[in-house]
Image (cartoon, rainbow, N blue to C red; front, side, top):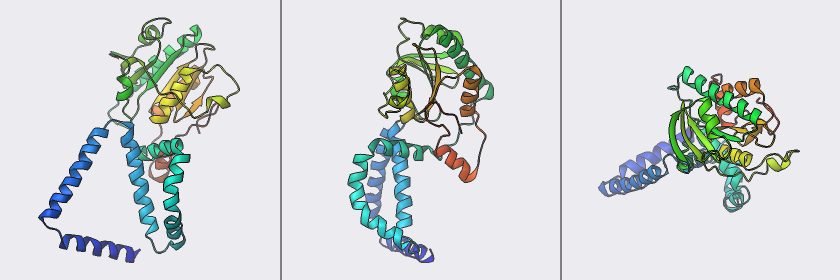
Length: 293
């Protein structure tokens, strides 16, 4: 480790000794290019993916240069050229989801969200889901957390209204102009309705014993795979209520379980250190029909 730090310091000294005005212009242009790229990717899922890639590259670079890990360094140098081509082709969807989680791991929960605001939103969503379930009116409710959903909001009808149970019931009343699609909620505001969600291609629904899950459930899984949003789904055929997060689904929820699960997402116990980092990196949801760990 000491030799690694010494080499690093020597390299930095070597760079600064040869720094001139042309080098400064060169670095400025490169910095400007990266700044423009990051500005264009701002508020998109690509920025989360990029953050995960950079973090992984730095981690592998540091470990492969440690002389105390010769076997690991040899393995990286030998297999990396082949893996660069093979792995992205075979595991493209899985890598994307993993890197997005890695990029979101260091993001802390916003503190500006008042407890009363969260509680009012959850109460409205829970009451609406239960009443929609009784009537067997299908619904798809997306609760935004950290990740921006602007690209999906733009596909719907802007409402920017205060979230209430009656408003959600009206939106999802059958054959109304806004019932087909998802509503997106941010804080205590219903931002947009009739939004188009990406459909999941993970195959999770094909492994379930029942066949009552259609486009709404695929859309719920799809948006949960590309963002950290929490999604509440009400089945039009059965009236079952489900919660989807991180590409996983919990089904057949009653009012008490629905409230507990949604409250756990918005008011989780704060864990510090490695345990908290791992909890954010691997969301505590088991597969379909499962429970939160």
